[in-house]
Length: 172
Image 1 (cartoon, rainbow, N blue to C red):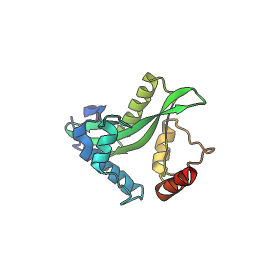
Image 2: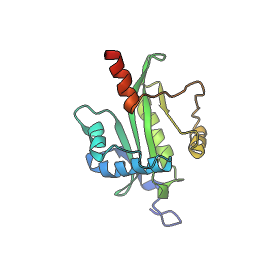
Image 3: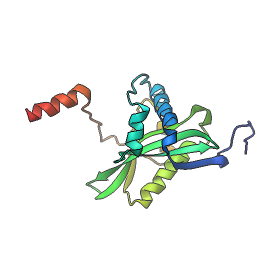
Image 4: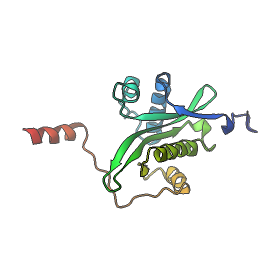
């Protein structure tokens, strides 16, 4: 079915678990997301890395894709967490992306809704994610869904050299 502008309508939208055949498109989406968030060239992960994380012997994450016909138009990549406060599992949404040509049609909301349902089915106490403070349109989108920002939390990170240096310093 087509909308008045001749584009496929969201009634044709299918949400499903990602498959190994989707890896190249998922990787392209990751690169496009990084570009849009002003991290162009920062993606060092290769399609094989993504495939191993999603479909290897010990998967580290899961992904749900949004498809219209044979075309992937978006995805959500997520992994399990655990809250000692709640004493329950949770889900961390690592990436949510909808192809620019398909935005504004409820696809992102459908993907998030799917994850909320999945979290409920799994007995999770929360679904959480990070959003860049500069991504005002995403923040507004999430707030419309009744998500709330956590001002009391600061994200901290050890990576690259600092991760290695700190770890090796403690074991020396």
